Structure formats: C-alpha cells, structure tokens
Image: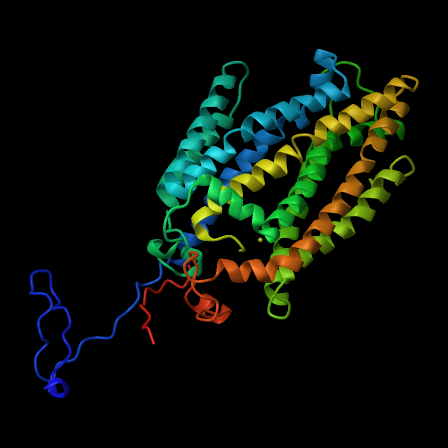
Length: 417
C-alpha cells in the first residue's frame, strides 16, 4: 500500500544502483544545497596583500611622469597643456584594454585573465627599460609569480556564499550586460561620482608637485629651476602624504560604513558623498590661501557581469576623469599664462587658478553619490532576486552572510526547509 511504502531515493555510492527502494525502515536523507565556497582567513589576507601590491605597481606606473614633470618640461621645452597631454595619452592607451579584459573576466578564469594582463603590462615596461634603467619590470615579474602562486580563483558569486552554478544562470551577451548596467541607476550615479573623484585626483596627482615647488619659489624658500635635473622634494612629500591619508581614509571609511550600515542601509554612498562634499571647500581654501601661506596648500550588480561593470566604471571614470583632467588643467594654465607676464609668480597663479575647477567637480561628485543613495536599496534588491545570481534577499540576511562569508573557513552545507 502507498501508506506503508518508503519513498524511493538514489542509492549512494559510485557503483550502486540508482532509483531503488531504500528498504523497510530506511529514510532518504534530506536534500542539501551545495556548500558555500570558503577560504581560510590567512589565505584571504595573503591574497589581499598580493592584490594590493599589484595595484601599487599599477599606480606607480600611472603617476611616474608626475615625479619628473619639471625635468620633462625643461628638457623638451613643452608648455603645461602639452605636458598634461602626455598623461592623457598614456592613460587613454591603457584604458583601451579595460572593456576587453572585463568581458574576458566575466566569461573565463579571472586569475588567468589577470595574469595575461600583467604579462602584457610587464612586456611594455620591459621594452621601455632598454631605453633607460628601470626596476619596474622586475617588480612586475614578482607580482605575476605571486598572483599565480598565492591568489585563488573563487567561483562567481562567492561573495554571496553561493556556487558557480548560481552565479547568474544563462550567460548573457556583452550588449545585454551593458543595457542592464545602463538601467541600474545606482551603478550609473556611482560611476559618475567615481569619475568626478578621478578627475580631481588625476589633476592633483599630476600637477600638485609642480604647484608646490612653484609655491616654495614664490615664498622665497627655494630658488627657481632653470636647468634639469630639478631638485623637488615636494614630490616625495606629496606622495608620502597621499599614501598616509589614503590608508587612513580607507580604514576609517570602511569602519564607518560597517558600523552605520547596521542603522542606515545606504551608508556607503552617503559616506562617499559626505567625504567629497567636505573636500570641496577644503580644496578651494587651500588653493586660494596658497599665495599667502604654504601650509594651507561599494554590491548592486549581479555576479554574471561584475567584470564588465568594473571595466566600464574604470573606463568611464578614467577617460572622463584623470585621463583628461591633467590636460584640461594644463590647458587652462597655458591660456592664462599667455595673457600674463612671464614670471614665476604668474606661472604659479595660472596653475593655482586652473585648479579651481577641481573644487566644483568634487562637489558634483558628492552630489552623484547622494543620488546613488536614492537608488541603492532598489537596485540592491533587484540584484538579490532569485535567478539573477544572488540568493533571495528574504532567505539570506546580513547575519547569515557574516556566518557563511568567505572568511568563515567552514564548508558546512545548509538544508532546504
């Protein structure tokens, strides 16, 4: 009879018959979901350190011209606008590969894609090392070895404690990914906010060492440089301050977001907005007071297309941001200098006034992050809907994510209700 028969379940074991009755008194085990991908905490720290090292080398290449900008201008006798164009062309060439690698990263092994990118990057650096002695190719080779040996390649969607099979369902095309991202207003406004931030950091990172040197000359603290090599300690000072404030800012921002997200779900974009809006008046005052005193001087995207999203954000942020801002700043400075007497004071004032646009752009970036906060919860809920590559939001809360996160070190499976 049906009531006295046990339900059938598959026979365990590699060679056992399938679909037979389990026999009297035997019950089938409850169905389980695949165990979430996990990583020991020490492996995560090592991987994070390697990725930070690779990013450090990236930015060392990014701003290598800024450290010798005065010498470049003296040797080649180029104006501020042409000097800024060097950085624009350099960054523009690098960014041509970003959409390609984003597409590959969403469809193939991300670790292999990164390794191939570093190999190309190192090859370009090695080719230039024959022109002048450089240590960067050696450091980049070390980065490639560390990436291959120490950085794991987690399944897509592992940040949401799910396996590769859950990360997005059927594979979408690149155009479909772009259309999805274009309708994701949290992504759009955060990209514009990052673009504004990149615009300012690009302009300041490229021109600030020269600006500080000319400020020292104007205040009589250093004689003008008319022949290279130009001794400029401000490059080292500005770089050191940038590193220290960057580390402190990341730690404080991450901790503030972790604490306040328990109270306000939109904590991350609000913190970014407040930071940029507070930076705008400080930057403006530092520029205005420079002639008087020298001392004044985040997930809402589904896992299946996060590589494409990151690539698009990098491309837009840098092309409209720090790829063009050095040239635009230099162009404004050159236009202002052409209308003024040729003196160190007028050079300094021209560069100072060309920086003022950065204060307004950084304020616009803060406004973009405020708009991000308006759409964050809606887009985050859409990204967590079943079938989009993340577990349903009503099934997994923040406490579950903390217990089952990447750094849990546990691989226990969970039962379905």
